[in-house]
Length: 56
Image 1 (cartoon, one colour):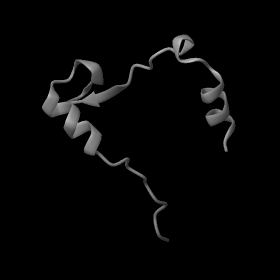
Image 2 (cartoon, rainbow, N blue to C red):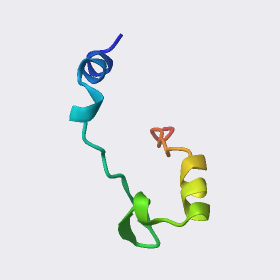
Image 3 (tube, rainbow, N blue to C red):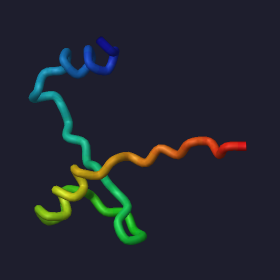
C-alpha cells in the first residue's frame, strides 16, 4: 500500500477537501466541473498521452 493511500484512508471524510480538476480545451484552461454532461463523459474517456523517446 502506498503512502498516499494510507494518508487518504487516515483522514476522516468530513476533513477532506475536494480537488478541482482543470483541463485545456480549445486553447484555454477550464475546470471540468463547468463542463456539460457530454463534455464530462468525453473527458472521462480520454487516455493520457505518453510520449516515447525518438528512435535513433
